Length: 101
Image (tube, rainbow, N blue to C red):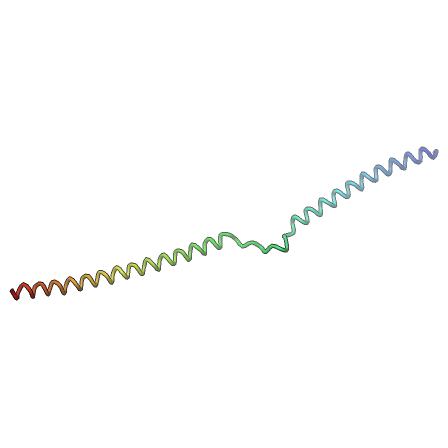
């Protein structure tokens, strides 16, 4: 084999090796990217489920509405009792006034 043939064969082998090295490099870069995508960012706190906050707000709002409804019902009942007492007193006063005439 002549020196030119040996050099040509080595050039072909080197080209083949460089193609393999390029493929290996591409595979390693792809693996690094997938590992980076799988790892959560450490500077960000894990997100809580958005449904928890929503349902807590609904529960608080519902409780406030129920309490305000109960208090307004109590106020209406107290008002009805007061009006009834006033009417009873006024009726007895009206009867006394009618008898006295």
